[in-house]
Length: 405
Image (cartoon, rainbow, N blue to C red):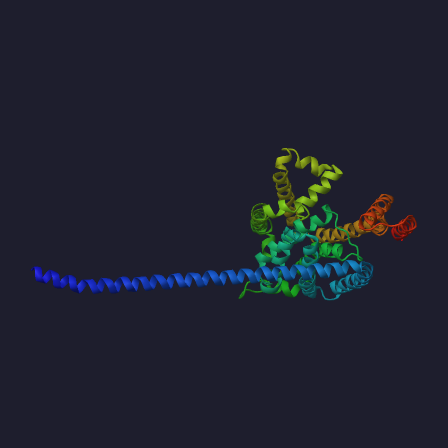
């Protein structure tokens, strides 16, 4: 029995050694793979950082070049803006079904250009605002799901709800000589015009929206169903808005909070609006301070939510009435043009005067700077080498002439 046990132990020992060795090899392979994965991640992260730095530098260069040729760019922008707006109005009457493609082309061209400019100005967090979130959804609807009725109604609510009323409440100005202001107006104005044409002036798209296999209908099926109407024009868009608000809060106020605290020059919508409201000491500043300064951000989110709920509710009667919808389009355009006139006649002259003053302050030194230069120059010369009286006087005159020039 003992001999049998010994032989069994001798048989098991090599097996255990083999198993241990194979386990060690597997473990070593796992370690090697994890190291390779870590190295790959590190390489990709470095490449991403380098790409980010290159893009930021290029954006800065482009923005600086644009500022150097600001007057010429403004003239070109005014020319192209006036001709383009007139051409769009012609297209709106001649071929309303093609306005969606003009809108998509506008978005693909000018939103990336805006990112470049805003990145240089440290305004790039504006691109996380609801208007860009909504415009991205519009592109998905128009290009990928043009026959989806429910998706169309959600987009209609966004376009003729918060986006359209923001154009009026935040006083967007239609100024053809300013590319930034022109893009801001069109981002809020064009989606409403596009969905207006689909709702009332585009029978082909309207007919294509009926379910496959069913006959063409004479009217929208949900016009008679109030529950269906309020669900897809109010409740579902409100849920989509809440999703955006949660994501925005997570990114700006949680993930990027330290970045924003380190650099007060980086602007967000809340920073910009609170800054302007505090300076004007208007109704919005007083309302946001009802719960104290420490809760202004919460009040800002609450006021924005109330604004969104009210404007989305108004899309229901707008959707049902052609006359009301046409009147609303006219109101948006007239408000933008009026604000643009106010900007050109009241704000722009003050901006031009301020820019001229800044240029003079940079080019021409002040009297104090001249006196300081005159005091420092002789002292520096005396420390470097001894000079006679005539040479010192000559050097002082030359320094004075240099400062004056």
